[in-house]
Image (cartoon, rainbow, N blue to C red; front, side, top):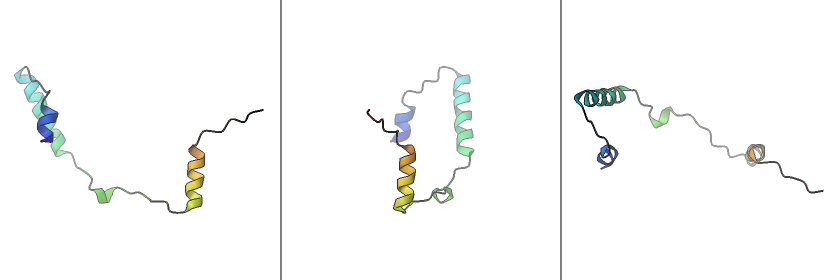
Length: 65
């Protein structure tokens, strides 16, 4: 199970450390999460637009003299 493997190396050596860990878990659980439908993205299908985008991010070729 994923949770058990993540928590396998967690060592709580004092009651204060345990309390802080539990507080952090509770805070994390109460944070709002975005659903996948809330993420906005665009899939570019225009070959010219893709070519322009890729060419902007390629390193410049060195010319030999």
